[in-house]
Length: 464
Length: 93
Image 1 (cartoon, rainbow over the protein chains, first blue to last red):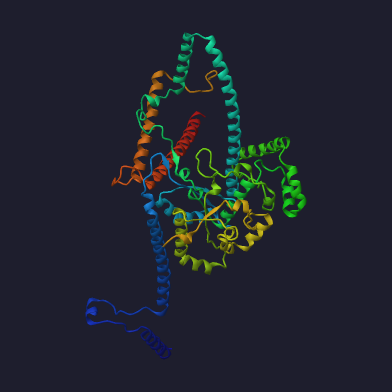
Image 2 (tube, rainbow over the protein chains, first blue to last red; image 1 turned 90 degrees about the horizontal axis):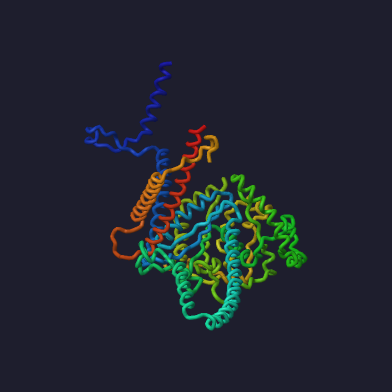
């Protein structure tokens, strides 16, 4: 036993001494008690290299991202140094953010927060963010804004006509009465009348601001707040719309079409009929379309149907509100008439703020790169290490929006803006969407009458 | 309106109490306003005061700041009221 034990022990000791390299040392180190310096074993070397490379890759990428955003923020900063009269509101940009397919809104919001918002902020433009958690909300919102504008325009026209008529009538009566009065009334009575009229006038025009307070004797008292967008004559130089994600863009375009070409009242067809139209798309349906124009009787029925649903919604706040149905479908665009209230040669403006209508403002589309899924992990890692390029393109595009590099919408190219993003969408999700008739997965269609009104921002027009 | 001492509506306030309540409210509003001005000034206005007029960045910053401040204030107020109500009811029953 003892004899057989010693050789193996010796061999083990040999192996240890062989593996352990002598390393570098010198007497001074030895005197100080520093062990011999030697590089770690192969496995440790691999471990440390992989670790440092991966971490430094992340750190480098983050620093570059920061540098890039800073660069673009600096580029637009001079704009924010411009003076702004205190009664003016800066240019306002509307931002539509949709979550990427089968992911949460947070993912898109991160992109917005990191790469878009800083540039907008440092350029001093104002922004208004509209987000959705469910498909169709952006479309409904855009369409509703345009429909509201159309209704207001129609009301305004009617009101103007009515006033005009009234004024004519009134002026005729007035002249007749005053002629009669002059003969009948004595001078004294007239004076009294006048005094009364003056008193009434004083009362109606009375304003505390004439007497005390900050506004007393303030020369700027009567200045109204003005939007800077309202002061621009060219609508493509006013405001702007940013869509983050291909889906948001699709919905925006659909919404614009729905708002302009669709009817003002919600369609009366029930869902079954809707599906029919979608499947059939036959000429019969189209010819029937004008017949089913909203009549007052049916309208009330519709309202009654709508009312209990909304009441239910209020009672149970947890139940999400259903997304409003489309008023018009892409295959019906060509049959719809362009509304008369929007077809004037003047720029269509919001009545209150006088800013150009939202669809006249130029559009910026930002592709939202987002891969999901287990098998895509290598690609995702690769992208994660190259986020700086995404950051650069986002910031540059936002800068083009801020600096207003605008070109007219080309219906052949621009419907495909950010279309490359669709390659990222999970296939299962796309299939599901097709089954459900989702507007994201269906092909984006437009009508030339509407598309010719649009403008887009072109990021390649920005100088580096 | 209390019926047989039930109901428990708010007690009638004398004019003195009303005045003091109004004063307290005014104090509250003034306090909030001062805080708002202070915060937004600190956040948005550059202390070098190169120009007398506001520039674009500052004015949009102030816009957002004030809007946020008011919104938060309203939300906090609502929540506090809810808490207060819950507390009051708890005291009663």
